[in-house]
Every structure is written in structure tokens, then in C-alpha cells.
Amino acid sequence: MQVSEHAGDEPHLGGVVPVERPHPASSLPRPRRIAVLTGGANTERNVSISSGTAVVRALRGLGHAVAYVDSASPPVVPDQDPEAAFLTTEVEEEDLGDRPVAPTATAPPDLEALAQVREGQLSGVLAPGLLPILEHADVVFIAVFGDEGESGATQRFLDEHGLTYTGPSAAVCELTFDKAATKRRLRSEGILTPDWLVVRAGHLEEDLAELDVPGPWIVKPVAGGSTIGLSHVEDASQLPAACELASAEGPDALIERFVPGRDFTIGVLGDQVFAVVEAITDRELYDYEAKYTPGESRKQVPAELTEEQTAEVKRLTLEVHRLLGIGDTSSRADFRLGPDGRFTFFETNPLPGLTPTSSYPISALAEGIEFPQLCEELVMRALRGAETVGTAGDAGAGA
Image 1: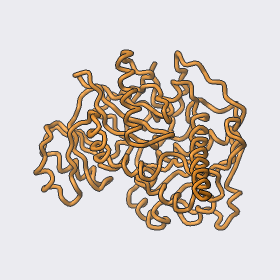
Image 2: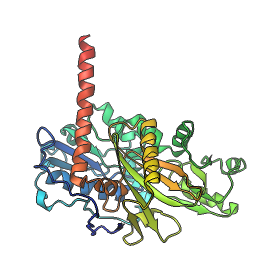
Image 3: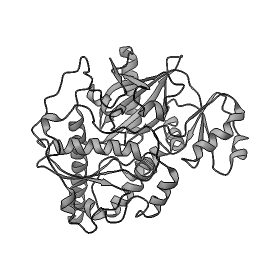
Image 4: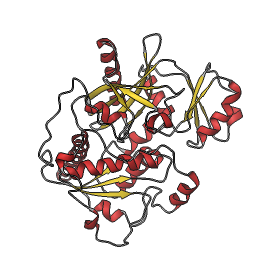
């Protein structure tokens, strides 16, 4: 069955048994106060806002008090009581869809404008005046992407202030945000990944002179997401320009051997691997425009693979999740099935997008996990993890 990339689509997944929704907030001991941290001042701002808006809607519909917190925008009313930011009943439970519903943007925001905003943020991740709202929450739901949310910077900031948050630790984010470091780690464990070369900003000619990876190539930022700055290069003379484009996001660029084949992405939550999704587009690359422009791509779920192939790519996905230490939370891994019948790993994301066209909620839905439940489950795991750490700390203090 194919799912089109359109924010308004509400497809029925054939073969999936709908899961009965629980009573609002019934899976948590009580309705929680949740701050959804979204926005950010980086090129993935629009994707983040779309994801954050969907999460806010879903959690409010389940009865939680939820604050929408744009990390790049100071409060409209300075020094307002933080409690005023936490709203409920925006959406009735019966009106919740099984997929995210939110605006979907198709163009990255202006880099110069974002740089100006970034200068005023605390630790480069939070606008002044927002910290009291986060401190008032039981848990912060991280829906900030790019270097702010995915590099570990936001997680370190929240750790410094003793705040509970969804997703993996700062150390895990720092590793997975660096595509080269991730590839080195996984290759050392026997995971197949394409040969590559890192081209450092300011060392273009020097590093390109060391290139021994045969073409054609994919060039992309070493650190970045949403396929921004991605190029497919056939002629070596085009590599400098492609590296410059990728370095605008990086600052370093990654030159990777191009592997032909079919693209698959698979979601994970703890030790549960979701359905395999195939991303299909008529464009040359499954790039930013293909991902977020309605009608430019479609997703087949479950992917048309043999039982053996499905089992193999799921096994690899879970192994990647474990080897990178992602733990009892989310990740999404990307693989390509080549002509030789082998799955090649490309990258993983422990803070996957939650927009109407994002693969992670689609992968989960095909396993019967509807979007509101998925969001609440991420909250529950964050709270459970914080309680475990707190209990261990109490035990140590009394020893």
C-alpha cells in the first residue's frame, strides 16, 4: 500500500488492525504538564515547527496540559506566569487522527535571519524568558532538530538545569549527529556502510587530493538532517562546489560512494522495530524537496520485500539502535538495498521528524501505534527513565 506525501491525506493502512484509543492520558498516572520544545534557529526550523505543532495537538487531545515553546522566540508577554503557557482541550480526543496533522513547509528558512536570532539565545538553544516554562513542566518533549536539537546542545542545556526530556542523552545525540563518527562506529562492528571521505571546511583542496573513493558520489553535510545540502555528483570537477554547498550546513562535508538501489527507513522504539517503509520518488534524489513537497514522493508501507529481506533489515536496524546506545527511546535508520541483495546503512536519527510526511510515525502506524499514543509513549519513557535515575541516586546517597 502506498502513502502519498500530502499533509491532508489520511490513508487507511491495509492489513493494520486499528488500536482502540485509551481514555485521555490513561496510560500515565495522571495528566502531565508537558513543554513541547520546537522551532529553533536553524535550517530545519520549518520541519521542527510542523513536528512540534502535531505533537502539541496530539498530547492536548489526550488530556495533557501542553505548552508550545518556540526555542527561538521570546515570550510575547514577558514574566508571565509559566502556568499560563500550559493549555488543554485544544483538540477533542475523538477528533484526533492516527497520523500527525500539522503544516508542512517546503523551503528551508533564511540562514542570515536565523544567525541573528541565534546570537540572542541562551547557550545557543533557547530564547530568553523561556526557561521558567520548561522548569514548570514535568517533561520537555524535544521537537527541535538541526544542530540545536540533534547535536546534543539542547540536551546538555536541559541536563544543566535538571530537566527531564524525551529522546536520548546528549552523548548519543553528539555521536549520531556526526555521520562520519557514526559510520566509523558501526563499520567497526561489521555494519555495511559506503566508503567515505570527510572534507574539512577550509581544507577543500588538501582533503580532495586524498580522495580514493570511486565515483559517482553523494556529497552531504557531516552534521545535518532533512537531506539539506545533499548532492549527487558524477564528475569529479563538480565535487568542490558540492562540498561548498554541504559545508554551509556542516561546516564539514562528507563524500560518500554512491550506492544504487531502493531506499528504506525503519522506526524503532526501545526494543520494538516498526514496519519497513520504502521511500519512492521520481526525482533524481530523495532530497529536502522530495521529502516535504506534497506529491513529490510517496511511501510504501509495509515495503514490498521478501520475508527474509524484511527480517534482515529489521535485525540490522535494531542492531544499529543498540550499538549506538540509543536505549529506551526512538530512532529511525536509513538503508539502501543494492543490486547485490545487501542492505547498506547510511544514517540514523534518534530524534526523527514527526510531520505529516515523516517516515517515523508512518512506520509506527503500520504496527498499529497511532500518533497520539506514540507521542505519549515517548513522554512516558522519559518520565520512567528519570524516575529510575532518581531512585538509583537516592539509593547511592543512602549507601
